[in-house]
Length: 419
Image (tube, rainbow, N blue to C red; front, side, top):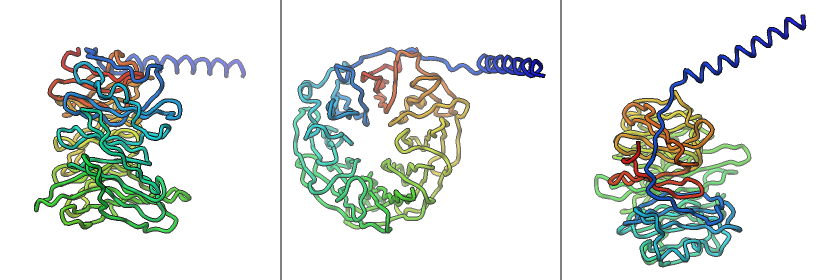
C-alpha cells in the first residue's frame, strides 16, 4: 500500500512539473525593448535609498522631489536637471538638499507651477516654502505653528493651496483651506470645515480647478472622514466657488461605506474623476451629480494614479489588471488581464503616440511597460537596460524623452531611438 502511494505521489509530482513547464513554454512572450539612454544622474553619492515625488517640467529643466526614507541620516532633496544633459542647475548644486528646515523632517510634497512654470513650493508638514526654480532662490518661508499642514499641496494659477489643521495629519475638530501667493507668500484663508461625525477624524485635500460656463473659477477637492477604531471611512467631494468666495456644493453620498481617497481629483471637460480605494467615480463638475461609478475593484491610494486623457480613463488595479473606460459614459473600452502587472508605489501612467506607459512589477522585477491605448494589447516591456524602474514617470511629448527613477539614479531615455 505504501509503495503504491509512493508511486502515485511520484507520478503526480512529475506530471505537475511537466505541466508547469508546458505552461511556461506555451505562455505568450512579451517583446522586449532596447532603449537609447540619454543620461543617468546619481541621486545620492553613497547610493542611499530615496523616494520620488511627481516630475515637473520647468523651462529647460525637469524637476523632482526626492524625500529621504530616513531624513535623520540622509537629507531630503530636489533635483533640478537639464532635460537634454542631466546636469544639475548650477544655482541648485550647492543646496539641493537644504529644502527641509529644520533638518530631519520628511518632505511630504513638492509642486511646480505659476508663471513660466518657474515657481516651486515644498511642504514638510510644519512649514511651506516658495522657491524660484531657475535661480534657486528661496522666496518665502511660512511656518504653521501652532498648526500643521496637510501632507499634500497643489498649485492653481499663481497660488499654492494648502489644507491646515490643529492636529496632524487628521483632525477631530476642523480643517481650513489656505492659499499662498507664489511670489510673495502672502496667505489667504478661503474656508473652514468642521468635523461632522463623532469619533471620526477628517482631512481635506488641496484642490484642482475648473472654469465654469459663467467663467467662475471652481476649486474641486475631497473630504475624508475616518474612524480608526472601526476602520470605517466616508468620502465627500467639495466644490468651492473662488470667484464668489462661497461653497458651491458638497457631495456626501456618492460612495459606499468603508471608503477613502487621497489623490487630488482630476477635472476633464465637465467631469470630475475621483480615485477611490475601491473604485473610480465620475461626477458632474457644476452639480456634483454622479455620472458613473466603477466599484468593487482594489486600487490602493498610494500605488498607480488614475489617468484621464483624450476622453478616456485608465486605471490599474492592485492585482495587475489595466482598465480603459470612456470618460463620458463609463463604458469599458478594453481590459488587459492576460498579464498581471502589479503596481509599485507612487506610480502613474503617461501617454506617448498612442502608447500607454507605466512602471510595474512583472516576472520578478520592476519593468517599464507599454500597452496600446486603442486595444490594451501589450506592446513591449523594457529589456533590462533599466535596472529597477519604479515610481512616477514624465514624458516630453515633443522630443519623446521619458524621465524616471531607476534606483539609484534619475534617468532619461529616448523613446524614438529605442528598438
